[in-house]
Length: 462
Image (tube, rainbow, N blue to C red; front, side, top):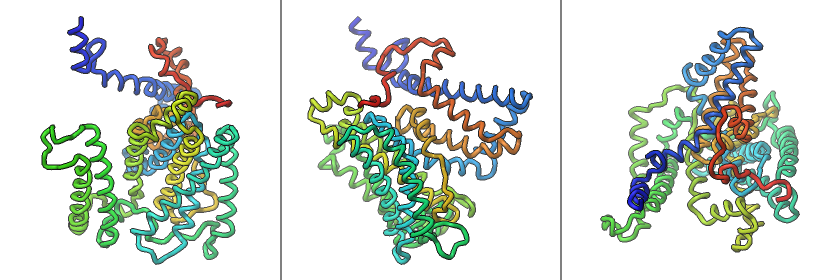
């Protein structure tokens, strides 16, 4: 019997000979997949009942697929819609992990957008290597400060973050309207909007990046960011592999030198090679394409959040506070500091989402008065669908981006209102938030481990 157990441990297999990673993957994807399937099934029934034709159901869903993936530019527009979803859902997930329900990401989205718009048009002479990071940083800082306020109120007074962040949303909406209408209004524009941000503060489209790389300062900025990303990924790899001299890597005197060497090599090669490649050939040829570098920022943000939550002391403290505040306090964790810090990080991610929309997506590269996204509310469903896992959020954000992008063609091709997608998204939220409903529908047994059903937040008195 002991030999069987040892074989299981060595091979990483469990019941029925399945690898442990496969069981974990099945556990992670099972309930969200059923929730999606059930939501789309009920959506099909609604379309069938309201239209009176089963063919309309197929026309509607085929139009949704064509609009999201097949039509010219459809896939890239799906990725454009995905980007803010990733940042906002990551912000929601960070709060959930610490036992906080940041329902105010929509307001933080607005504050980040107006902050980036202000810094983006403040000065016109700065190079992109300086102005663009300043604008993105301003958006993140604005969202962080706006979210830290209800975090501080909760830490000091016990006021619940759901009520505070919900009220802060309306303050953010009205404050943004005031700033657009008066202090930041573009006096020369016929529409009510802020001034256009400086071209050097705009988030680069993948098509326009070719021209940017021909500028040495912009190429230097890209090389620096790629080197920084390479350092971060190499650092994660070193920690995961536990690379030491004993494993045969004797070229490096210290393990900590590997990420730096990788970063320098990647940065130097990028600075030399990318401008040469841009002169000869470039894969993105659509001058009207809106896909921008925010996509890469979103992927790196997901990796960063994973690293923060599961590879750092700060993340461990945040998850401990979320799981059991009493045990965290007994262990010496500063509860108040972690609440404020968690809300600030959550708000910074939401603020970057608003920044991306202003600097990279808005047609006027400004913030118009009637700026409404609804991204923040969808982000809650995306975080739940991804089970608050950063990589699960990438997948669920892509799905919601596809539904958002394909809804218009669905309506045009079938006559079914595009707001059916909103019903489907609401059903997804319902089924993911209340798994017993899905189990009752499919007559499934409850999970063996109770912790899989742990609540996301601690309730109104937490």
